[in-house]
Amino acid sequence: MLPARRFLPSISLLAAFEAAARTESITAAARELDLTQSAVSRQIRALEEQLGVELFVRERQTIRLTPAGDSYVREIREALRRISSASLNLRANPRGGTLNLAILPTFGTRWLAPRLGRFLAANPGITINLMTRYSPFDFRLDSIDAAIHFGHPHWPGAELTFLMPETTIPACSPGFLKEHKLEEPADFLDAPLLHLTTRPDAWEKWLANNGAPAANVHGMLFDQFATAAQAATAGLGVALLPTFLIQEELQRGDLVAAIDREMESSERYYLACPLERVNYPPLQAFREWVEKEAQKKD
Picture 1 (cartoon, rainbow, N blue to C red):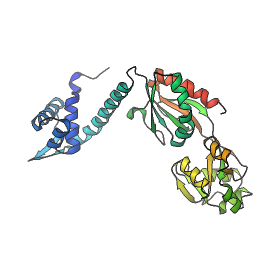
Picture 2 (picture 1 turned 45 degrees about the horizontal axis):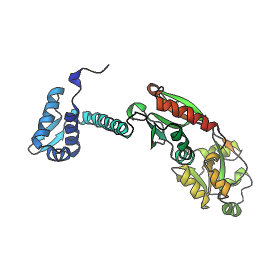
Picture 3 (picture 1 turned 135 degrees about the vertical axis):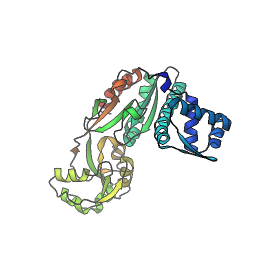
Picture 4 (picture 1 turned 60 degrees about the horizontal axis):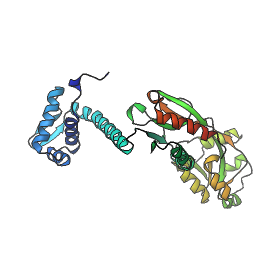
């Protein structure tokens, strides 16, 4: 149920308020909105009267937000952004088939993107917008229909669909392997190790899993698998990399397994979506397709 009309100010009033709050100037807001200064002032006054709250402190020719105004604009700005995004998506696809999908960077570029054409060809009425996210977020605060999630099957307020497990290997360049003696897991303690910031304990887990000391492991840090793979290819060290994301490098021989000790991650890949979007047709179509793609061996 929608709230009472008196608590729903018009978009024009909210836009005038947001612009004035952001620019801290009635003049700048009027210029941005292509209105007169008096028109913007009237709209802000009308909003204050409707809400029964002073939003600005007016001092001579300047304005500044009151504490109430500062709190209000933070929420209004996000609401206006979501309305704008929804309108843009509808304009891009009048049939309403837009799917906003949050992806993990390397998973998106190396696994999903090369396959996405097949989905779009089979579903010509659907438009997919991709946005990069590194970690779980609140679906209630972000206009995203679904997200690729790597981790344990837990995301409050979301339904998770299992996609695939993950196996990692210690990978390096052939030249690096020739220069370093890496015959046993303990040998890796003397080699440059490349780390991912989102998985800071990955090497510790691998070493412990293979019976080697796992304390005080150091090395270069990277925020994405892609850059870690490039660094390993360049001979900067050994990286723990998911095998399905470095198939091309392995096939070309740019990367090789430093030692034959694979490790299956305890976390898995999932498609997460908010409960209220489970039956959204474009999401249903994508979920069915990506499940099948994840089961393929190509």
